[in-house]
Length: 96
Image 1 (cartoon, rainbow, N blue to C red):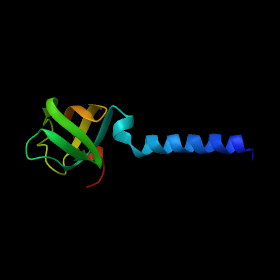
Image 2: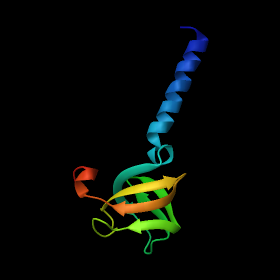
Image 3: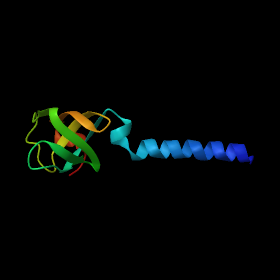
């Protein structure tokens, strides 16, 4: 295998791994369960292992129940700053 081909393959694998391992930063929207959140709404929330910042501009929508640890939510964000967090049906997050 040529050295340049090897470096191209390694570069492609590295970029692919980064995109897969950081879904909150790679996508503008994701679904998951709330792992942790501050006592109030403002601050850093952890949702399915991804941290997002909730600010006074974030739209909080408890459509399918309260935004508590374990709740299934859909998050819309820009570079990790949430523009909207809303509860959705638990089955959309899979089991548990």
